[in-house]
Image 1 (cartoon, helix red, strand yellow):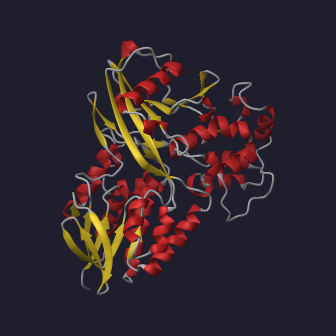
Image 2 (cartoon, helix red, strand yellow; image 1 turned 180 degrees about the horizontal axis):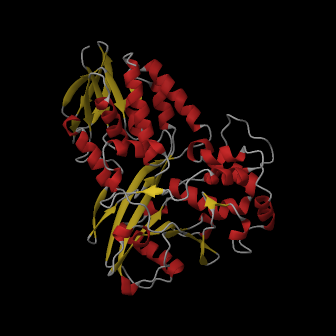
Length: 459
């Protein structure tokens, strides 16, 4: 069989996964990865900060979602992973930091007595005590908004105080408008339990190993994991090469790049949704339009270094969340040294402060200096901090986080099917497919690789 030439556009974690899977398959592929930037990794970047290697964006991945861990096992890096030093976190409420209830699942307390008296509405405490039954039976295949599900099962105060800051912060979104099937399928499954959401979550917890880590990272940063993956396929990667357009000719796909023309038997667009939409505009207008319709949020992450003598943070806490009702600019603050043992230092304390939601883009209107100043004001409010950092760094991520509305997975399947009809041989993959996070991006890359293999009738 002649070699089939496959171009992968984008060398983030998704594109690298696609290329790795194709090259490791038993089939005869020539794979070329085109990356417009000077380095691979996309949004997963690690760089020096105050004597440490500190992530510029995501600093961990979910350990219990299989796709990333399986890939990292294969490339031989998993034995180097570390898990959080501290699992406990707090929430800023009523002018003080209150520990998140324990046990909880995505912020939902499994025991109403674990919540300090007065924080929750008494009716909601009763709902938890009675198991959190939904008011009506949930259809087996239907998707719902996270907010609708949680408000119905355990009440508004549980949602607004705990779930919204956690899931809304992670996804920079509005959980009242976020797909439960995409972002929290375990909640949807648990809510279908005959005794209610709480009973379903308890049952799931009982069947899981409490000693298993929730998150993993690498001591050299998340960016190091991506570098190791890229090393496995380094001969297939071309950096600083931008794809301008794609077209069809003589049963091949023609890529016009910043260095010339290339012909491919198959093409995988492992780029952000808006970039893929632009490239597909003439060859698959319907798929292009659907990708353009996916809303995205911009976020900022500010890293701060303080002398230990100038700051006092809660011990054994990994950080805290801020509900939108608090009106602060920050959405979360991570105590890096408490969270990760390799970032614990006797002389300095590192904080990572997040801002930005899809409905709160104040951070975008501020200069770096103004953003740091505003977030320092929030730290003064929440931590009583009156000192200044001796080093700071601002990382901005415009349009970085896709927003997943109810029915998202169904719409994505329809889009992929449309693309197969309008532009056979072109696949799409990325963080906008299966949800936020590294495992979801790897899963998308896996599926795109399978679609290429199946295109050529290979089992």
